[in-house]
Length: 49
Ligand SMILES: [Zn+2]
Image 1 (cartoon, protein in one colour):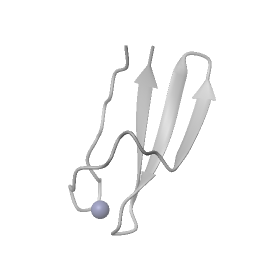
Image 2: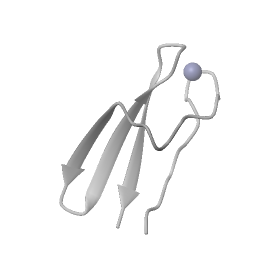
Image 3: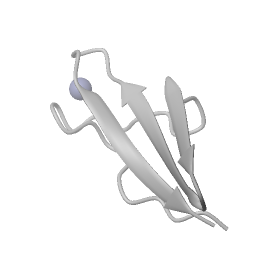
């Protein structure tokens, strides 16, 4: 089960497509995903198993 802490753009508040991350980083049981919005803002989300 994933916990999503943020799923809207931090710049323009637009909903992000959370199933299509630009980048994914893993460290232990945490995953950080970066989403780039059309406005140019990169939003990072953290998911834990
Ligand atoms: Zn945006």
